[in-house]
Length: 302
Image (cartoon, rainbow, N blue to C red; front, side, top):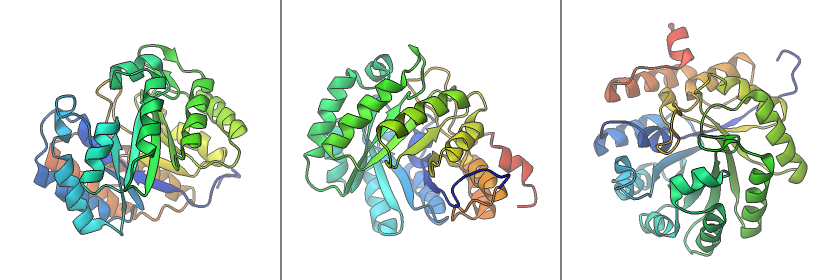
């Protein structure tokens, strides 16, 4: 492993059905979503973001969230941990009513992005998170901290802002934390600086990294995180995704690119690369996407 001190295994959370679908320009039929979820769930991911309980007026692609959640529970509950993203108390209540057991609450480290994304201040979102943590019926609540490194409206985001949100969330009983480069423009040095601060403030805490690939830094940022001992990542098959409220952001880091790099480094993922490539190609055909991931083009023998 090139002499690097990196984890022997990593955990990958697949986010294509939520983050991937939400920014797709044309409506995706519910039956097609179900087919793709089935294909992805059969690959061995331990965790997957299934859908998002947001206002259909804000993100029309997620209009069928209750049906998707119920379908997932009927077919895959107990095999894959299905996660529903919620932006507020109403979304959390709707998710729980549909049978969701794992929630991830979305907020931003940047005040300006949080206002654009949720129409709330960061403090307002934290107050909403506290209320959600008081609900009954869930098994796990996590947070996804968007714009943890850079913001399309405010530039670089201080690590202190991320640390403050993590601290408050832990006080509420949040069990899972994701730190996200929503814009896909963070450099490895920015990632190192912010992760160093997080690890200093919260030694021993487990958290996931969520990288987009706008500048092509996705794998470099993963490598930086790996060398700092991080072993949990969120990616999207076929590199789908993007935030509707982050102008200029492109898709997520492709799951197949992360699995391919990890495999070449001797890091276990539990995911079969050949099968994953087949599924990603299938997603591109179903949704008429041009695949941008490196592994799909390079691994011709799969």
